[in-house]
Amino acid sequence: GEAGLMVDGVYATGLQAGRAPRHAHTLRAFVDIFQQQGLGGLWRGVSANVARASLLSGAQLTTYDQCKQAAVRAGWLDGPQLHLASSCLS
Image (tube, rainbow, N blue to C red; front, top):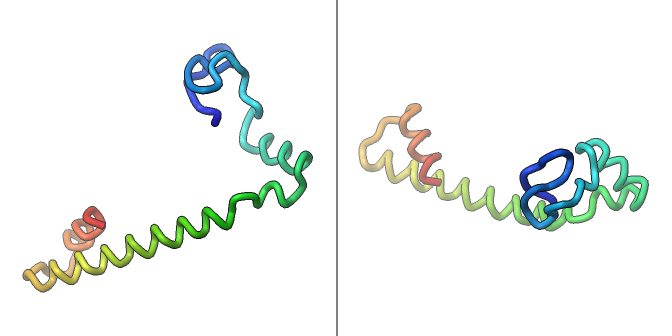
């Protein structure tokens, strides 16, 4: 993809070194994609991203809840410290 250090309007590092970016900014990218591929182009890849987000969210919520329950059983009081510790562990 397009990533790297920009120097004088071209990438100085990364896979696109020596080339200018395809789009000037995010809004221009949306307009270009819509003009070239239509509305479907803007939605390409959404199903894979939804599946990924669902799996990660489910795993994070489950881990958070298990950590919190274990800490409460160990004597922690419900409060900001418990929530922070559970969040960090999840």
